[in-house]
Length: 109
Length: 113
Image 1 (tube, chains in turn green, cyan):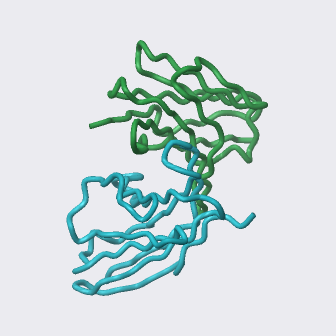
Image 2 (cartoon, rainbow over the protein chains, first blue to last red; image 1 turned 90 degrees about the vertical axis):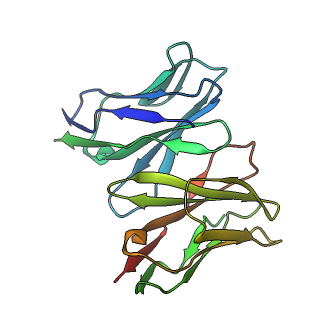
């Protein structure tokens, strides 16, 4: 079945820096790749997603890139702010969502 | 529009008991998926329901079951509870299985004593 690896497990940056989280997936038939942000004690929230027919998608300070050949996709956050601190999960889906293990992002003021 | 509603928010049970969790999807959403979240295993897919039919199932034992009603509300049941079943159970809904954006509820935190 599908397997999703996510790196790094923790990421510390200074406010204003960029942050990049990378994921690889195993099933080349996966066609949908969402990213979720989960703050402590709260629900995972969808922040951006991309489909397999698109290479890049942006939404303000957040962007996601997809390389189908290499089977990896990345989340890019620019101009990070303390409120970006949370756990971020990537996921890949063919028929069901398979999640990565999460990245704890800490943005220091 | 109200979000995904899960009840109860917290539950404490003892080993061997059974439990039923409820999920009301966003109005108009017909697909409901359930996930188990634990510190050690992360977010793991349990099952997905659409039009009262289970479409997909994850790698969980038969003690975990679910159903969906005609109004799209869903329940999951865990029988013969084990200590390892302690987790946050999350429900997510989407318009249908092909409209992939899934929106999560706040979850039910289940603790087994």
